[in-house]
Amino acid sequence: MKKIKIIALSAIAIMATCSLASCGENKKGSDDLYICVYDGGYGTSWINTLAQKYEEETGIHVEATADSSILDRLENQLKNGPDYDIYMSHGINYQNFAASGYLANLDDLYEEEVTGTSKQFKDRLVSGSLENSLTEGEDGQSHYYKVNYTQGAGGFVYNVDMFETNGWTVPTTYQELLTLAKKIVDDKVAVVNGDRGETIVPFAWSGKDRQYYWDYPVFEWWYELAGETKMNKYLEYKGDDGKYLTGYETYNPATNNKEFMEAYQMWYDLIAVNPSYSNANAYGGNLVTAQAAFANQKAAMIPYAQWAQYEIKNAVKKTDLGFDFKMMKTPKAKANSTYNYNYLVGFGDSMIVPEKSANQEKAKDFLKYMATYDACKTFVKEAEGAFLAFDYSDVDITDLRTSDPYTASVYDILTTCKNFNLTSKNPITYWNVDTIIPWINNKYYYASACSDNVNNTKEIVGAQIYEAAKQGWSTWCRNAGLKD
Image: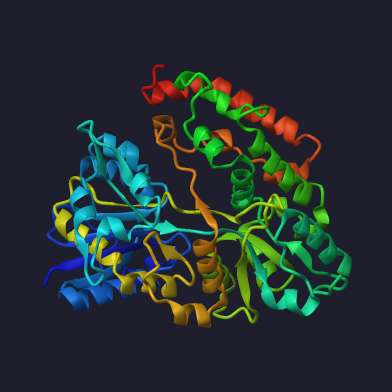
């Protein structure tokens, strides 16, 4: 029998699976199929279950091992000979790799019919995936070089039981959110088994290693304030004259970046100037501290994304937190907005096949299997509320939604909100990784604004972002080969 090896990138999984296969063994030249999956908050149960089911259907043997550092070696492996035949992860710069000739062309996969669906693979994708997976290859032509890994939801996870017990209403607008946060503080509800005098705070969050979780509601407010037309222009990263070299004007806080700075101001007015609204010293605390605060019912809400349920339970080592919790639709920035908006967190995460893989056809077959209705449902169940980037309109997950309020809430967001992503086709964005994002050079201001809100106002931050863009732009354009 052929053998498929599935690699889950998790330190815990490494210890659990090294007994199944030799960790670090040289897999190059093997006739087996190796699949590398980065955990990223989804755990490894889902991939193990899919592997077992795939083996039952195909007769192909499946093993599991683990490796938590593959991203450090990914480009070198793609260039010189991969250890694996499929990589599934965040942080894969697929456009760069495709242009360098490192990735397999997946055009034929997109035309194949997915078993049990009567649909072609391309028709099983969630909206936006086709555009997001198409890029220019080494031949100068556009092809599909990836499959989107997940679709996501981001915003506020809240304690349902706590809200109901204390008569707190789930906010639907930003103003209602402000009112709720003040009420939670004013109500002075004692923390059960807490320290003497300790009362529930509105939010638990981490400024040390997860401050960017605030991006999820902020991005949604930003998109709502700017509107689709202006956001599409923003994502071109060109100047008002239509040229790449003046693209730094994207960050002008008085014009193109105005709404982003307004969304930052909304966050600032909620969090930065109200230290009593957060867990103590949140701006310097780590994620585990924030997770524990929410799990131990010391905070009513926590900014998070779709992997919240799995990750929080895992952090506090509980299979049941003892209360129901959901992800709320991010309160509208404007009360009269037609939609609630949802930023598709993780939408840029990728599933790729190396050009130098000797097992491309087997790899494509496994990716096609992941688009089946059963595989899509399995992922939601085992990842505890996260969804693959496939269309779930024909996937019956009624039982999961009925039994798990969190899964039901994420599904509701994905199917009723105005979904959007912030991916761009401008080469400057993928030849300068973690540079051309709303926070230039990956510099965030949430934690610093809480420790020093005087020097991190909207005006100061907006000016700093704009200046950093102007200073670095010519170099970033040169890196991307952009000359006009």
